[in-house]
Image 1 (cartoon, rainbow, N blue to C red):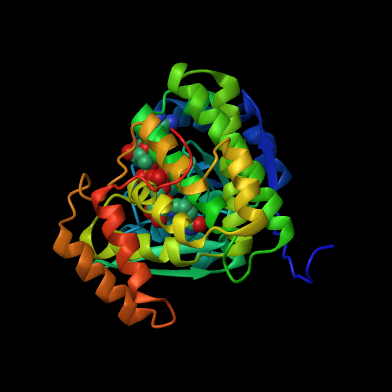
Image 2 (spheres, protein in one colour):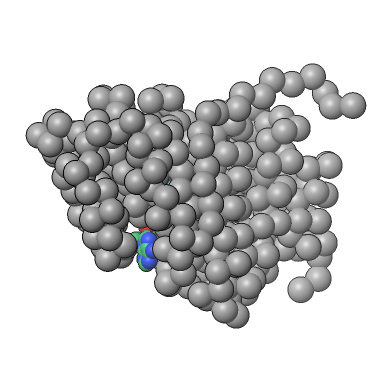
Length: 351
Ligand code: NAD
């Protein structure tokens, strides 16, 4: 019998499969979008060109090239472009940065979004938006920014370089693992998160030997979708908050920071049935050590030192975090950050 719980499911339509990109014009019609503003990451420019042609007279305008963390001036320019072309809907094709820019437009215009993710960050499944001004990132939650339709086509991510793939998978694994211990965690989210870990682990290990394997890429997109959905319902906890602080204050790369911090947070936070289920999905004797070993196998940096942080900055981050979150034990935070800084393998399990 589960403990009493509340679970909120979010409305979105998911289409996954090789060649799913070809369905996008149909999806545009289903949402009755007459004029599309297309936002595309540079890396998938050719696919965006094909999509632009397939949209025919529904294509209204395009924004090429996006920046991480949605700089405010880019968000304003994108909103102006949407007004200029009279857009009635947005298609974002690319990683979390392209989807983030579409969300910035939807936040003020309520325009529907069709997201076509090519990385595993999971933003397409959440109603969370973010915008950065003067180095400060503001985030919020609004159902208006949740993409109405998500189209996952593994053909688009087949050539995602292995280093970006592995770091992005680490980011997705962090959504799953943390979703089991936040204040809003519930049994339905736990099942989603555990299945997400299984799909991500299988997919990652398979792409390490065969980067263009379509089954593996499908598995990764499926896992990323589950991870995003787990993040959307469980919200963020200590892990995401630490990564947010590290990214904002010391300009560390988003996905890689997750890989260095997650094993150390899992070492303290994962307990009980959820821990055992995550270990089974990861095929590891110990969750924290298993995550560390998987990231090492995938050559994702497992120390903040490798990302350019100094030991003094790690201590400074612990002070800042403890000041902002007095509810957390400062000794634990310091331990997490110093171990993440040096990249110390969590004890437990065998390699
Ligand atoms: P990203 O979108 O910047 O993409 C990472 C890199 O991958 C870029 O260099 C991009 O050009 C490249 N790339 C993308 N698709 C490619 C392809 N098919 N082939 C080759 N290269 C490709 O980064 P990301 O990790 O996807 O997303 C990170 C951003 O998303 C951050 O700003 C983060 O805050 C945000 N995010 C938001 C949420 C949310 O719920 N709102 C959730 C997760 C992440």
